Image 1 (cartoon, rainbow, N blue to C red):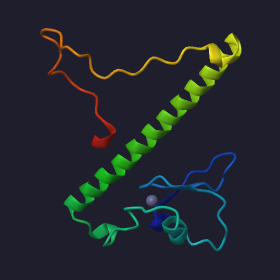
Image 2 (cartoon, rainbow, N blue to C red; image 1 turned 180 degrees about the vertical axis):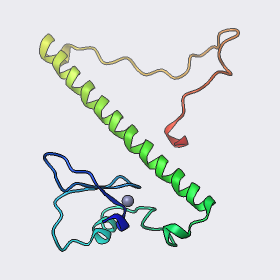
Image 3 (tube, rainbow, N blue to C red; image 1 turned 30 degrees about the vertical axis):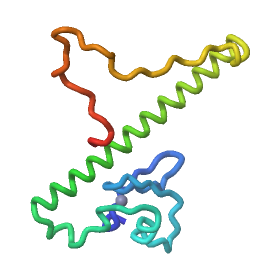
Image 4 (tube, helix red, strand yellow; image 1 turned 90 degrees about the vertical axis):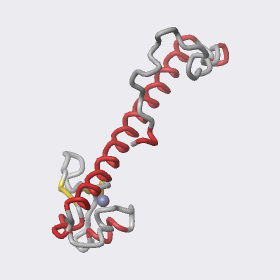
Length: 137
Ligand SMILES: [Zn+2]
């Protein structure tokens, strides 16, 4: 299991959960004859499994590039989970408001999302920090 990147992450409901340390693929319901490498590769392209050489033979530069990819994957996964949880909460809140106030047809449409303000304030924060975009991750 470990050679295929998996770490045992049991829970009360799924005692055989295994997660790839690199691409965060989670698999449950393992059968005795399952090949972890095969189960991993057929479900997701994983840079750890695609290494052209043994992990112990990586140069320091190759290791750092691999670690960079692993961190990008981790941040993307956590960000997507956070976004999805937020969107689910927004939908549930909207539904509660519709239920509370009656028909959704009488609710006004949400205001359009505006981009940057048209004019900059004098001495504004044009050179200040900016939010990272997902394409930078
Ligand atoms: Zn993986």
